[in-house]
Amino acid sequence: MYTAPVLIAGEWRQAAESGRFQPANPSTRDAIEQLYPVSNWLDCDAALDAAQQAAQVLKSLPAQSRARFLERFAELIEADAESICSQAHEETGLPVKPRLLEVELPRTTNQLRQAARAAAEGSWARATIDTATNIRSLHAPLGPVIIFGPNNFPLAFNGVAGGDFAAAIAAGNPVIAKAHSAHPGTCQLLAKLAVQALNETGLPLATVQMLYATSRADGLKMVSDPRTGAAAFTGSRAAGLALKQAADAVGTPIYLELSSINPVVFLAGALRERGDDLAQEFASSCLMGTGQFCTNPGLVILPSGNDAEQFVGRCVELFNSSPVGTLLSAGVETNLSRAVEELQSAGATLLTDNVTGDPTRVARPNTLLRVSGREFLQQPERCQTEAFGNTALVVVSDSTDETRQILGALEGNLTGCIYSAADDGDDSDYNQIEPVMRSKVGRLLNDKMPTGVAVSPAMNHGGPFPASGHPGFTAVGIPASLIRFSKLDCYDNVRAHRLPPSLQNDNPTGAWRLVDGEWTRAPL
Image 1 (tube, rainbow, N blue to C red):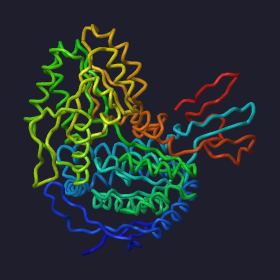
Image 2 (spheres, rainbow, N blue to C red; image 1 turned 60 degrees about the vertical axis):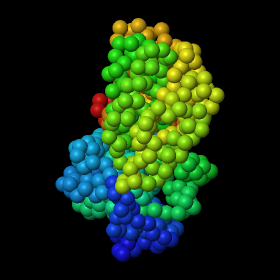
Image 3 (tube, rainbow, N blue to C red; image 1 turned 180 degrees about the horizontal axis):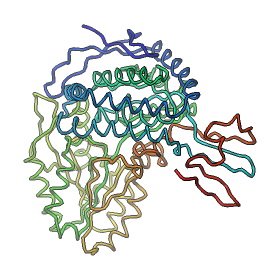
Image 4 (cartoon, rainbow, N blue to C red; image 1 turned 90 degrees about the horizontal axis):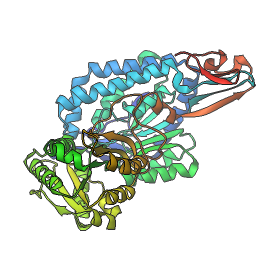
């Protein structure tokens, strides 16, 4: 059987292999007729060398060249949308319509275009000029960036086309993408279009490279190699923490998105006003995409009482009656089963009826579990086990103070939601729990489920550990996401002609200047 080539230094070449793997269609459990290589260190070393050389060339090119590449790449993806989405559907089970073709692919090209505009406009670099002391600074590229994409967004978070990729390229860095083993064919299609865009726009061909897989040891070695400028990872906590440990040991910046159960608190007034509607809203959000979103609401906290019991009962009905979706891979299925078992062993009671999946495809039944607030606080770590998929845990709290304790026992999360009465009758309770929730999440929502992440400059898709590796950065939201892949360069008394072009002018677009003791910003 044919083994797919890897992309190194602008060439599709036979991999230096340490093994091979074969993906499977989760909708049928059938193997896909294509083998992919596990690259050994020879491939990793060659890619790092080529990326290092490309980084030097990129520094000498105007930002508009990166913008043209990103724009052209977006155009090529749109032109080949049908085949890309068909391939992604076969590998992940995600529906072509509306999910892939009408939602995720447009989001992918939108991100690329937003990054192109940010690169061309340049204010993301935060040029700062103190003319009195002749000190100037700006954010500049770090060098080769290694991107590990996740399994749940084969397009919008893909290592060779997604948000991290767009931000790294826009900031001036070459990318070495590690394709995901759940959708390697989709990654290959995107990489081929990236090579075409590189050829058409004149960027170094090693600006984008791709390996399908490496051994664990070689992956750790890559992120800790001195040629690596930064790394970005979205995926499991175990793999992410191993990469972080290797990167931290040598000081390589690494940006992680690891796990999040995204707590949702329903206050008493909200349940009394619209409990049935909220049950529908929660169930729809939790089961959307078979629960395979990093912002999926996996933990619900309710005040005890009749309204809460009615809410839980309605949720059980909805979970039992809703169609069971297909999970992304057999690995996701196995991990979800283990997570449910762990929650039950920690004292959670199973509320839903079904206990077995569909043997003809990769699936697990819609699952709702319950614990009391007291039980949660006895084993908060185990009760926070992330069940990635169509599963959620309900915690019934005896008091506002107990709810505060539950929130205080949480790890960091990407999002947190509080639902309250429309007439502000819950404000007293809200004011007591909001500060605790606020300290635990990156994005706080009111009266809105967390599923979905808008590609907005104001968005924060990050949060306290372990939701992300650093609470000060976001993986979504341009231009802020570009800063992750930069370093702050300062120039003290450097002659004007030796400065970067954006610092040579005393009033460049978007720059901050110290004038008469006050900082002012030039118009964009």
